[in-house]
Image (tube, rainbow, N blue to C red):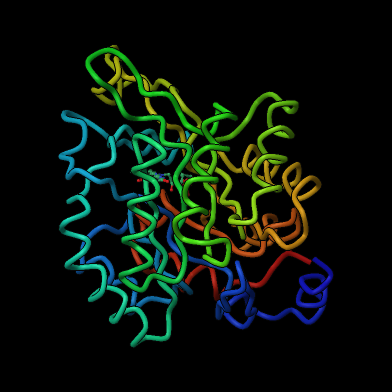
Length: 313
Ligand SMILES: Cc1cc2nc3c(=O)[nH]c(=O)nc-3n(C[C@H](O)[C@H](O)[C@H](O)COP(=O)(O)O)c2cc1C
């Protein structure tokens, strides 16, 4: 944080503020968040952008069409997005073929490439992590915070809210990929501070984890479009994101920074759409940040507009 204060004092633009996460050097602190890049053409666009790294995924073992109907809405005037995409992606067999090419493309532009993996069991997290590393990715993000997977009218449990499950996933992944592997854990926002401490302790005591990504969407929000719901799946319930999520994201990052050991970096996510937002996350203890909603809405120019901005004095 003191380094950032120095940066502020010198009024440097974020684009000239190199940082590091999980021992990986980043030219600047800003990258796309999971959910915004799944295909080679997405990687191509991000390779040519100012994003300092490329986050692919979340990917799953089986290919998934995702949920049907209206699955995403953004209301700029109310400053939020809601989504229930349900992890659409082409599955592990596709990524075994395509990831090495995506890695080569990102690396040719001197960008690290990360993959977000979402398992439906600890064993699936293990398999997905193993394949991603074999394909040459620089970091695997374990998505333990997806709220949007439904089987009929039953919602799948969000992994990060089950401490034993978190522990088991981390232990099994470490056993397979080794404690040297560069792994981040992405979590949902915790409204119970006590539980947040508990999960941070589990994560903090794992030799596997080098970074925490906070936060995923706030689960099971509901938005009206006149008299009907904004999105179709889950009776209209979906993950809340966008600017209204920022105060929650900042609070989570601050709490996590106070608990996690220093060697575990934090990637802040939630509501970032201008330079000041990045400043606030860095000042709260994040080393890097990720952007989903504003990237979806504004495409690659969001990176140059944020990175060219000066922090508030
Ligand atoms: C359309 C959409 C799809 C998303 N898909 C994923 C995903 O596959 N994996 C994941 O970890 N997070 C996913 N997220 C969550 C984002 O990565 C991010 O944590 C959240 O949206 C908060 O950031 P934002 O306010 O910049 O949107 C998704 C978000 C949106 C809006």
